[in-house]
Length: 279
Ligand code: SF4
Image (tube, rainbow, N blue to C red; front, side, top):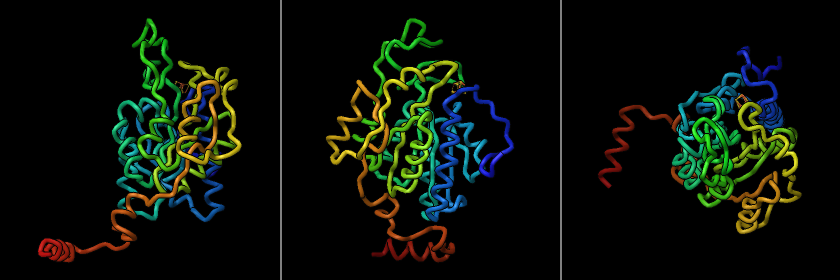
């Protein structure tokens, strides 16, 4: 066992794509430490679903969340202590079903958080119901005749919502995925990483994705180019699809003020509020 793995028994199915995500994130933490971001400053959260177990397995500080709320949880942590790097793990049902509004508004306000979506196109923990990213025709307990809905396109949706860093990774390309994770955490502003995560038990996409993935050789230069790449269906491009510099929410709101560092007593707060009200 390495020093980023907890003693918790791992209960993911053998072959699950979550193992690649887990190993890639540990590599990314190593890369970030080399760049001067100690693991004590990397705070994690997770929602509900198979992905959420990563919270139990990673030896990092954090706060477990409820379904679809990990991105809201880390926004609160970031605002309270802007010195931290905060990462929300979420499933595709978690992020684009239960947590959709949090995703859109976190991207819109450019909250300085990283959201890593374990996108397997299925609710695996509850044995195979279709999710917002399941393919049309997907068969499961809640769609026995095949889903009649078109899947959402997470990359296009996050671009449209205002995300300033959008990327896609694949656990089979582990080193590439680890590099994307490190870049996402380093980015100042809302970073979104969609990971094509095969679920060997309910939506085994290894063969399909092995054929379709293609690593981009450059970051697209414009929003329009990024959107075109996000919408490709002939191939599944991997890499950073969009990156833009824009003040992060907490900086736009309060500059360099840090509630933890610049803590005020109750009396000071009352005085401050009174002075604000009188002007
Ligand atoms: Fe992984 Fe699917 Fe098993 Fe969950 S059900 S652990 S996502 S293979």
